[in-house]
Amino acid sequence: MISILALLVVSLVGAPHPAQGTNSVCKDGTASAAVGRGACSGHGGVDAKATEAAAKAAKSAVTCTDGTSSAGGRGACSSHGGIAKVVKKAPMAKPTGKPAAKPKP
Image (cartoon, rainbow, N blue to C red; front, side):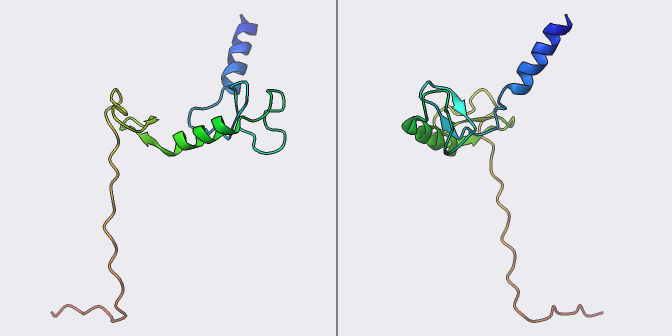
């Protein structure tokens, strides 16, 4: 029982977090967080086209209202409450260099 629990903990700790970006895609289809020399060294090397496609997909991802992310486009976040709205802040007034007028008593 303890060995099963230990195996479960190790597998969960070693699993990539969904919010982490993939930096390289290997030729055998696995993902690697490594970049540069040695990335995917045991997996046939880096698949440049797949890595580029993954980077483009990550840029087009949108955030859903429940905090998850989805590929953009029609139907994005359809079962997650829709796409989260971005709230724009009002621009700050530019300083004029003049002191503020004092209110009259």
